[in-house]
Image 1 (cartoon, one colour):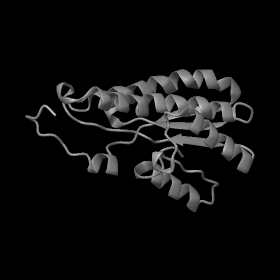
Image 2: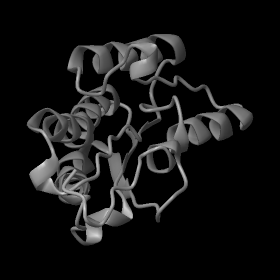
Image 3: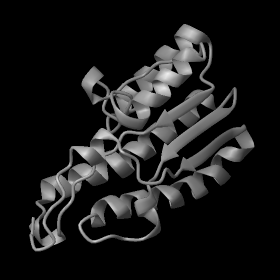
Image 4: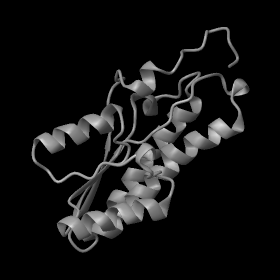
Length: 174
């Protein structure tokens, strides 16, 4: 589970462990950034070495920055694109390589924001919409290798990412 330090990823980690699954759970807090292909690859190699194969990979890591686009700095925009989109690409690609010979399942998380661009959520919404298209394309590429990939689209969920993010005033430009 990539993005397992809090929110949905943490819940998945806890449920899987309670079901006696062998779980490797990582996040930036544990030193694995989904944007770092070497760290993701090493995590998956470690799982194969420890358990012989990887059956499922779940990527829930995401960043949400709200505010009108005119008030956002490019560093924050780049961080969302990197984590939400590039991070999903890195995890899916490296997971596919780990499962290429044995098959398995990959789950990438979108958001209800993918269905419609929302003011103050523009970059987040765009990255989540991109994940849906990414999963559609990867599903065709991975199919001959018996590697499934799905986009999980939870409705608005009271996760720390949403509940600790201050909601900007409707009149605010930041």
